[in-house]
Amino acid sequence: MKVLFATSEIAPWVKTGGLGDVAGALPGALRALGHDVRVLVPAYPALLESFPDAEEIARPHWLGGLLPTPGLREAVAPDGTPLLLLDYPPYFKRPGSPYLGPEGRDWLDNHLRFGLLARVAAWLGSEASTLAWTPDIIHCHDWQTGLAPAYLHYLPGQLAKSLFTVHNLAFQGLFDHASLFELGLPDASWHINGVEFYGYLSFLKAGLQLADAITTVSPTYSKEIQTDAEGMGMAGLLRHRAADLSGILNGIDTQVWNPATDPSLLHNYSARHLEHKALNKADLQRQLGLEQRPDLPLLAVVSRLTEQKGLDLLLDVAPQVLAMPAQIAVLGSGAARMEQAWRAMAHQYPTQCAVTIGFDEALAHRIEAAADIFVMPSRFEPCGLNQMYSLRYGTPPVVRATGGLADTVIDAADEKHGSGFVFGPATAEALLQALQRATSAWQDPKLWRRLQKHGMARDSSWEAAARHYAELYQSL
Ligand code: ADP
Ligand code: GLC
Image 1 (tube, rainbow, N blue to C red):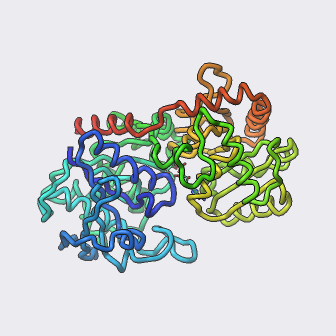
Image 2 (image 1 turned 180 degrees about the vertical axis):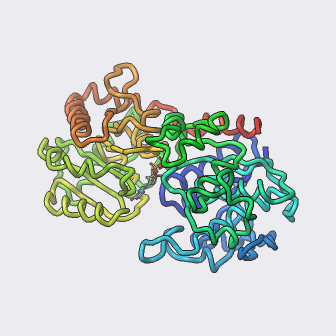
């Protein structure tokens, strides 16, 4: 199959969360199965710097509305995946986050920036394209590319089918009615069966409504979002499309996330040499200014600090957790109030709680390796990658039973397979109970070893997911 990935992030160059990781690894896994996958992504500064010789191979004209004429540059990622860099400096040559301006607010022209990305994806899948390569499938990811199925649907000359993958239903890409014209969408698309959503233009809804098939990144999440409680306003539409909706569990990049070879670690280790994990813990305690205490369980968080991730629950019980006693290391950024609250916690408990506000890939790796217990009390979690990194790094996770967390972590109560600790209600009490279970299990080296080994033995490579996607492409 010839498949065009359309994405607004791609690791290691541009990443704000798991979407970047997926776009960075899944194409390679599909190519390993023999499929011809290429990735369309905006030419952000980090990509242009990494590929200064990327040559222009096309200039899509007459895209409609106020959309400009961009260039398409060709590059090849280190894993061999061809990249199509969507080059339009006024839109994409901006520093920092792909979505936010310097004040932390969405860029005001995000509808045009990501509308252009979607429009060019559709152009590549239509008769208008001047490239020799035409995809069979356009695989879109999240609201940023949700309009691609709409363009394919409403504009003539379509050659490709579309698949829309929901990584997070909470981000909906809502814009006002005037954007319809700016984006060159026809009036007929302003309809409940089109792109209109309660008086707004929703990029997400466009993808859900008009793609030929929909996937989410875990089976449990694909069911949860069909309920009114968790469907974020889209449940009715998703139930309507249930026959075209499925959940395919994400994998992880097992080369990048491998404790035996991870270059960010000072002490590499494997399931057979877990004793080296303790050296990483000592290093991290030193680096973060925590007390050198091998005898205290070190709990860790690497996360966006938002409502979704439920880290306010951990804040609520942190004093009790630290009194167990234990240590907590947090790496994250996001909502200003949450950042502030965590900073205050670290200030109050300087030897026991270390908080790093920011985005630091190497530190994320070191924390996964050093911690004893990883904490993810998410209110919802479409898939979640960090719990899988934790399993692989011998760091049993404490997770809430939601979405992909429920699909990847097996509670310690299951002696044969248990790999972590799973709790139900999104409350501070339930989290505290799970953390108590985890820290007391940690005191029992034999039991702990067993949990670690189960987690480390789990196959979390992309291969299984890639096979599922390939079957779905074929069926389309
Ligand atoms: P989400 O995409 O909802 O943020 P995931 O668990 O799927 O959640 O993916 C998060 C990814 O982003 C992981 O690779 C994680 O290591 C990384 N990450 C999140 N916050 C940070 C941070 N502050 N520093 C470094 N990496 C981070
Ligand atoms: C989203 C979700 C996360 C998922 C990631 C990659 O950001 O919040 O749960 O793992 O996408 O699919």
